Image (cartoon, rainbow, N blue to C red; front, side, top):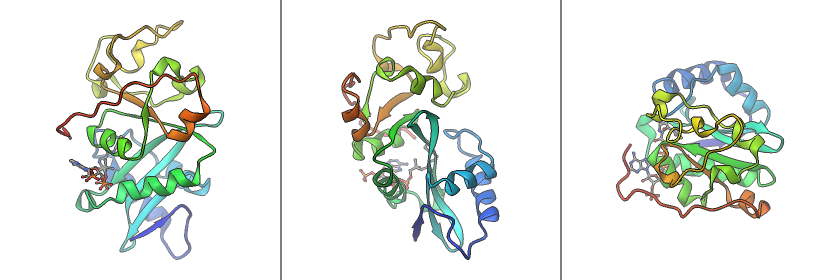
Length: 202
Ligand SMILES: CC(C)(COP(=O)(O)OP(=O)(O)OC[C@H]1O[C@@H](n2cnc3c(N)ncnc32)[C@H](O)[C@@H]1OP(=O)(O)O)[C@@H](O)C(=O)NCCC(=O)NCCS
């Protein structure tokens, strides 16, 4: 397995990324992406991919969402390569390389919550994030969040003027986490007790 954060010579990157995008499009937890955008992320040193036999079998990237704020995204490992620590390895590389950046992660995926916990991600109250970072995070569809209720779905908690108080953010389908370095740089950020379901529901 080769892990890289650059467009190494000798590979058919356009074809490999097109194939990756096609595979990713079948995943319910992932937002659709264009091959040219994933290539641009690699060119801008924001991604790590895992390559095996000339195919991208793992991908993780940091999408810019606000000034010096990034969101992890398009995290994918091919089904036949899962549970071999490929994702966790990609994240170790990616996060070690970008310690100066503020990085958050949003997810509705219990496996990602589990992996985030292993990586030391800290769940934070969304209204303790800088507003510019929060409004830049990925916009989940109602279908994805599973809720039509403004107070229980991810983005609709935003009223347009204020963030509405939410009793227990763990009831939201989407959890917002930041990496430890980001948490240390933001003393006002409010931690939520990390709770990971005993049983990982995929
Ligand atoms: C989420 C995903 C990237 C994980 O990739 P992966 O390479 O299989 O993950 P890793 O092997 O690095 O897993 C690390 C940990 O998660 C656990 N894990 C991974 N997949 C799991 C599963 N399906 N069920 C239970 N645990 C799982 C591993 O057991 C390991 O835990 P451990 O260290 O406590 O033993 C992969 O399942 C995937 O591509 N899913 C579809 C796309 C997606 O949902 N992306 C995330 C969007 S937020």
